[in-house]
Each structure stands twice: as C-alpha cells, then as structure tokens.
Length: 240
Figure 1 (cartoon, rainbow, N blue to C red):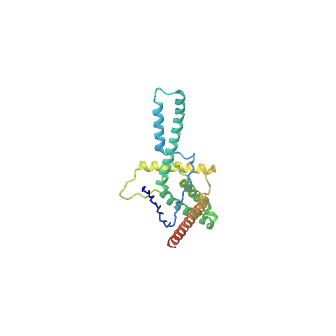
Figure 2: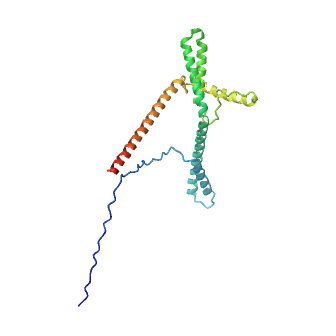
Figure 3: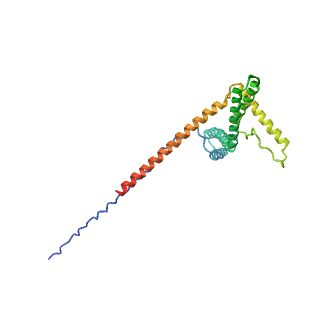
C-alpha cells in the first residue's frame, strides 16, 4: 500500500486586537520662514569670513572664483559689523534697563507735578514752571532716545557715601557727557525730530503694551482650557 501524504493544517493565529487608547496627536508647528533681514550670529559670520580669507590665500585660484570670493568677503564683513553692533546694543539695553525704568518713572512724576502746578499757579510763576516742565521733558527724551551704543550716563547719579571720595576727573567727564547728550536732545526737539511732549507718547505706548499683554494672557488661558478639555475627553474615552 502506497504511503499517504498528510498535509498539516496551518492556522494563522489572529493577533489579539489591541484596545486603542486615546490618541494624542502632537501639534506640529508651522515651519518658520527665514527672514532675509535677520542676520546670522556673530560666530557664524566670523567663521565664514575666516573660510573666505583662507580661500583667497590660495595661490592657484581661478579669476572668477577670486572675484566672487572678494565680493562675498566684503558682504560678510559688512554683515559682521552690523551683527556686532546689534549685539552691543542688546547687551547695553539689558544692562541699563532697570536704571532707565526707575528714572523714567521719576521724571514722569515730575512732569505730572509741573503740569498740576501750571494749572493751579498764577501767571507770575508760569514762566518758571514752563521752563521746569521743558527740562523734565528733555530728561524724558534723554532716557528714551539715549544713544544705543554708548554706556548710559544716569540722570540722577547715586549719592556718594561719606567714606568715599569721588574722583573729580570722573565726575567732570560724566557731567560733560550728560550735558552733551542733553544739548543734542534739545537740538532734536527744536528740529521736531523728537517729540515735544514725550509723556503723551509714553502713555500711549504703555496702553498699547498693556493691551498686547492682556491679549497674550487671554490667548494662553484659552490654550490651557482647550488642553484641559482634550485631556478630559481622552480620559472619558479610555474608561468607556
């Protein structure tokens, strides 16, 4: 009798269906479009300048490549100067932000006091009060429009302690710098390049900044509420 071949029945074991929990999709941020006006960092620009100089130092270099590299080097050096200037402005702005803030508040109080006195006093002292108000406005423009690349010279220098002797040379130099910038501020105000009533602009800027801050806080609160709602819905789906 011939042998009978038996075929083993193979059963494909069906994989157990996994219970899918709540799916959390990661929110993908839209790709940021590179702004051509934004310069790269100082270190990247320095590295590019060094690389271009090394390329130009080669003796056997094609004429067209040399001309292109020389143009590129000039452009990189100009961008590097702008980037270093911008970095210096940021550093000085951060360093003197607190000092300027307190001096601005002090000058604004003096302007409001002078305005109040002008509305109350008689015409005899009006000229003196107007001069005082003008000087306070000069001080406010001094704070707001101080040259960004210079170290800030305070309008109200701290009182020197009794055990410290101030240097006459340093104090004279500081006073001279302050007077020069004040003279420049007065010239700009006369030429109407700077506002004659800077406190009005300051108040409007404060209101706009406050409105922007309120909108930002409201937007963050709405995002938090939406995130809480998504988490709560996911928990309900999971337990169901």
